[in-house]
Length: 110
Length: 115
Picture 1 (cartoon, rainbow over the protein chains, first blue to last red):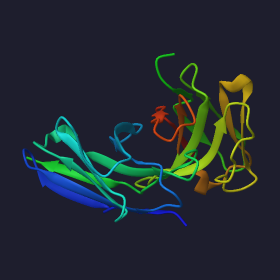
Picture 2 (cartoon, one colour; picture 1 turned 90 degrees about the vertical axis):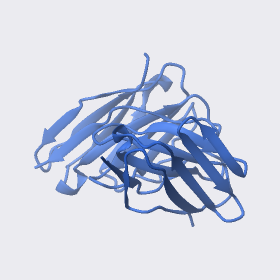
Picture 3 (cartoon, rainbow over the protein chains, first blue to last red; picture 1 turned 60 degrees about the vertical axis):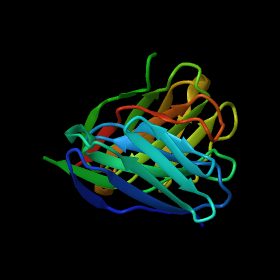
Picture 4 (cartoon, rainbow over the protein chains, first blue to last red; picture 1 turned 180 degrees about the vertical axis):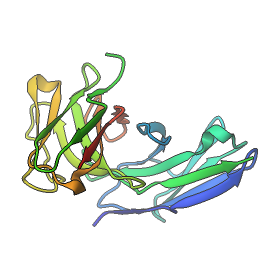
């Protein structure tokens, strides 16, 4: 079967660093996505990892370990506007259907 | 268009009525998805269209749900005899190709409330 697990909620302080973890079990592997979703808005693309390692993109970085079925999203220099849900997602075998985790709701406090 | 659009943005209906939700994908995108998102929950896959291939309907929760995509562009999701548990945000997304590396671009969603 396919399953994606991520924490339900996290709280962090403005200016700090936060790491949001995701573990996945998929039939085959076709990469892993992270999306950001602000309340009442549609998800927007953050990152896509298909190879092991860390990919950095400004304040956001995403890490993947295929052997461990594990990924994390790292947010640095947190800003209030980073308060949102972060969705981990993995395409199934064939890449057609994407399985989404329930999302991690991040609260950034002053 | 510049992005994925959906209409209506909000729909309130009475239990037992039929509703139609519309999605206009990004021009030229061959793949189109429908998802349902209940309050505070993740995205639940409903249906997937890719070009002229038969759609993947494996996520539709019951036979009250159906969707079509006309001319490989606009899609309509129809819910018949709506129930209160159908209340959710219905999101549409499109993708340029069937490749797994391509991201999906989401529309703003239709918030459906069944009274």
